[in-house]
Structure formats: structure tokens, C-alpha cells
Length: 255
Image 1 (cartoon, rainbow, N blue to C red):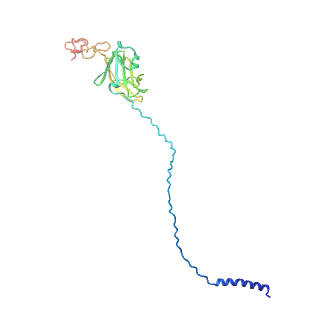
Image 2 (image 1 turned 45 degrees about the horizontal axis):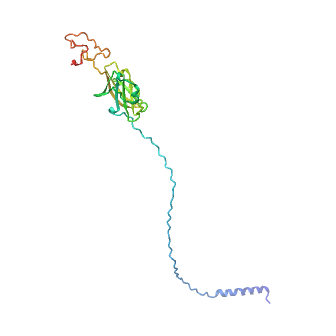
């Protein structure tokens, strides 16, 4: 009888022997081949769908451009008689100072300015002389009229006031004795218009003269404008050019 230890050994041997037999047996060869399979795939149509997208953009605020103030025309006095006219009102025709100040219209019976060579002339010994100026735009405050003697010395100055009916025109109403009736046969002035900044806009030479001629004295000079007497030059002798002449000598006899 086998002992238990020997029995276990026998059982182990019996278990291992079949496995060894199988592993030693030849392994049958397997046929290996590649089979080409054609698969028909239905044609796939790719449709591209165009979608119109309307985008409403919120407009950005337009930047504000700097505002520029339009440059006004340069202040000018109109040229020629359109820009400057003048007249003197005789005493017998003088009515109201306010008429000219309101309208700027020369009153009937006035002595209108005339042009002579390079100057204008006005007949004086009157009640008033008016000088009317026309501009290309409303007359600004500070625009001035100035009168100068022929020597260049300033005689008088006043600010121009626009007419109520037309702001582009202004009148100088003058009753100064050295304008309407100076103690001279004539007197020359330069009338100038200046802008508020001092720029000279216009200059005119104006002679204010008496409207009558008293004749000439012995030597051809005019008599004193106030006394109407000729200067004393002594008694005339037969050899003097003025011997026998009247005092004053008539203008028609002047050589």
C-alpha cells in the first residue's frame, strides 16, 4: 500500500504527463492569405449652404470737428465818390441837424463837393459841412474820422456813428469854425478814416474855400481874409508897378 506521500507524487506525475504529450505533438500549419474586399460606398453629396448674415452695425459717433469762425471781409471804405461824398449847407437853407443824422441824405440847396485835380473842394462860409462815408460792411465801434492840417498836424478827430437806416454808412456832421468859416480864403485838410485797430482805410485831400474872390493886392497877393485890406507897402510912385492901382487890384488886371 502506497504511503500518502508517495500517492501525492504519483498523482502529480499523472497530471503532468498528458500536458507534455500535447506540447510535443506537431502544430498543424495554418493557411494565411489576404482577401481584397471591395466595398461600394454610396456617393456622398456635400451641400454647402450659404447663409446670408445681415449684420446691423451700431454706427460709431462721428467725431466733432473743430468749428472755425468764418473770417469776415476786411473792413474797407468804398472807392471813389461811392465811398466818400460831402456837402456844406448854407445858413439860409439850414433846417435841422437831425435830418442828416438820420438819413445821411444831402439836403436841398446844399453845396456839393467837387473834384479838382488831386483834391476835393467845398465852398464854405456855411452853417454846417457833412462828410458821408460808405463801407463794405457795418461800421464797427471805434472807426474814426480824423482831419489833419497840410503840415501833418492833427486838427480834430471823432468816432464814426453808423446811420440808423443803414449801418454800412456813417456821416460826420461838422460845425467847427475852422471848417465852416475859417479866417482864411481857403484851408487844406487831409481827411483820414481809420479802423478800430488803427489801420488807415482812406485818405482824401480836401480844400475848404470861400466862394467869392475879392481880387488881388498890388503885388498880386490876396487881401487879409478878415479886414479885406492889403498889406501896407508904402505910397506908390510912378516907377512902382502898383502905382495908380486900386486897393485891391481887380483880378482881371493881374498879369
